[in-house]
Image (cartoon, rainbow, N blue to C red; front, side):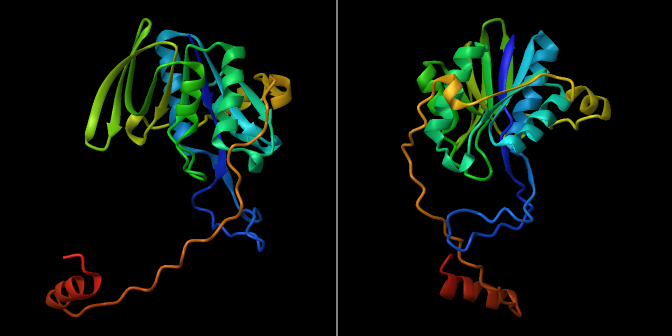
Length: 249
């Protein structure tokens, strides 16, 4: 079994994010980066599936040379090799990302594509669905459990009304949710081995991808600052304010 898994580089959620003065993007000074937490879960699930059934895990990222750190992290966790598609992430939209991944899937011919349900920077939650449509593959998103049996996958999904179970045939695209697993830490031996594992670098042009965009980002706006709260002296005053001012009861 071959599994293609994403290892997207995102700004660390604990970093203080500030916009550039011209609001064209974020100020990257003093900002830390890490692998997208949902991608970490996807990498862990890919490793568990291969540990059970055998096969290969290929970690993929799209971005500049710095994104190799996240691929190396995935390989330190246990992925067998990595692929970096070098491109300016500021010039990506969800559709272009999906089309780049489409060409990688056609090149690598995996049985399973595992992705985080969304990236914690853009929060678009679109790429996996677009990729599955372009491939003509079945998909199951927001997984909290995944079981493979031969050419069939049983996926349990987080949905608004609770959970649901779906069954799909492979090859298929899956996205991970928080309850699926607890990602392992990269061990020191794993980190040392990752340095020797193959990491291929290519461009969208090498894959024959048209890099025209469907979405144009015209600017960014910081959310309004939260106003300071107030203290109340009693439960009665709290109830009164919730009813008369907040109008939530």
